[in-house]
Length: 372
Length: 181
Image (cartoon, rainbow over all chains, first blue to last red; front, side, top):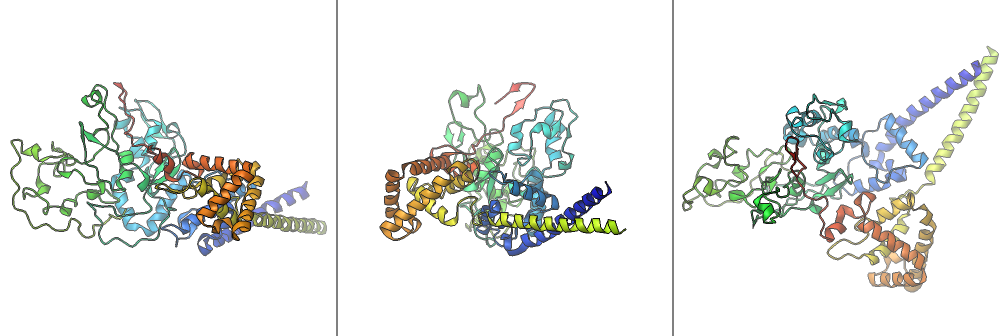
């Protein structure tokens, strides 16, 4: 019996030491040659090859990916059992861990994102009693919030009713973002490293960013921004002039219009999706034709400095547009900045255009945070 | 004390020997895998298969089969659900290259598009089971769900006029009024 115990003890210690040594050895191996070590396992070959053709081609795997002992042992088990999944993807906690790794290099973008509404946490979104007392949570919530969560809404929040009180079953996610970097960025996306653009605001065209892509929860893959649809919206029966900036196609996936309400004029006339319905904020009126990112700066979506992009050069009345009675100046204004029209104030007719400053370029120099 | 040491020494030897054997087995196991960019295909086989698939779905205003990720789809399936077709692919791809070398003195992947079409047409007559299999898998990869590696960015669905993912407002339920969408 003693002999058996000794053998068992030695075996356990040896396995532990081998695993520990192997783990550190593997860490060194994996960090070498920008991922060639990882590509030694053929399951990873395609992914390593993809990142070598991407914006992050000069970044080693482990600068972004977590590689704890548990992860390595899990990878080894899958490798030797020959049971790799068809598509190797990150678990929810891997995605969240990666966000802090993104921060190491993209500090400015991370800070902007963190200060904006898209860094809302699981607690803020899923334990909001104001929302939860009016609407039941459902799987569709995950389409835009917590799209990387591994499980159903019942695995995240309980109770599933309108009475509450609600609590997160996965309490470790409470302070974690529901829309981390990989919601809108595909790190392995093809492309070449980019220099910072000289100008960051576009009112006319698209500033390319090869990493922009939407993570689709159903397919569990990213769709490139350029492949996403920009809807054809109507204002009543009138087609709205839509900006074709591919970047905003990602915005439309969540800030989306809805079908016509039953019993509405639009539904009775078989009109298509209406501008301003649902979560849509497509500009009409004086701002019709602008892209979302013409005003909302990259990672924090702050539009407070955006007026100067075009005004006063493009002002029709010479007034300080920032002080006009719109939701830009005051959230309680009746005139939503997305849909404000000249006739909203000039109800007895729009006066003739006053003399304005000479036209200047519509694109102004760098504004922080507009590279996403 | 002596007997204890003896027992320990013997076990250690056995353990080390087992460790060496195990390590060697693992190393051999790792080396026997495909070291290229694919799960099953070699890089050469992938180039040949790309030439064939791109004659079945060539590029126009939409991407060709290989551009849309069909090779990724086929490779993944040959490594998993379509293992039974491995031999057909190995032999078929080799035969395709042989035909190309015989007629044009170069591998199929190096041939011109017109020459590739000629070889693929010949395969359709001479290697019908292989050709039918590749055509079927090409269609699956090009038109199937992007989650399986093909139909990159749902390109074939857009070709058919389907937006993927669709633009749709959130499903809103006001429980005091019932479903409103």
